[in-house]
Image 1: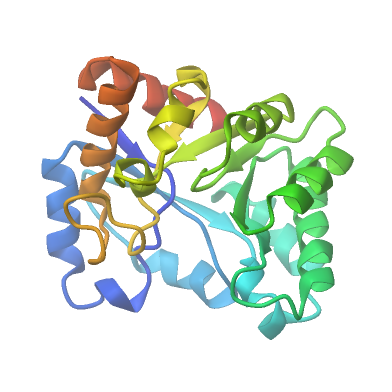
Image 2: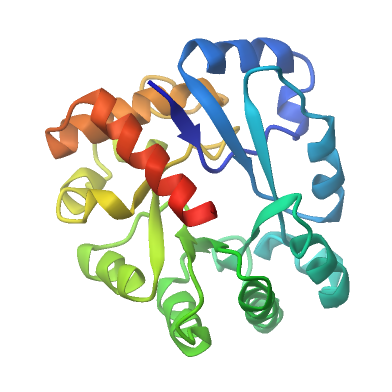
Length: 253
């Protein structure tokens, strides 16, 4: 069985003291592929420090909406240079976040459109962050979609209708630890969405699944998310691993 964690920030300081142990845990949990979205320029370089003999890492380049303020104006030429390289499989993470602050909403939107443009130019998928901004996010993706844009709504927590709208716009949906939260209600939503457009992610070190909720998340917990998805869809764990890993490779090429 092979699992892929399609969204993981292993380069952050939360892992600096026990990274080798974290990777060993991941290997024992059948995680063989870890995708690394960027949050700022520094994180793009920090990814290069990650090494493992049996786990493969895949880099992305982008400016997180919560990092836009510190990186104004977002350097499109620099971002294109990274994303156009064969070393990078996707553009992101980008998106909108109205939870922490709405002071730089217009700048976030401009950055998102820039990322969309680079995704179209490079032919690579875009990784979308969304917090309290669903309507604006989907509207912008709808406007930017020219038939070539694809990507993933990372940490999907929307409604069935919002999920289907994202699918119609060429997006996949990232299923993470929130799917295991008892009162989230996400299980009922996921059950009505096509399994062939779902991928698994931890968003480590954030959003750890039950029974580790509130603690540091890590890639090995992707197995717990896979088990939950198997339960929701009444599918075997092995099939979930095969389908979601296949979906990930189809999306990220």
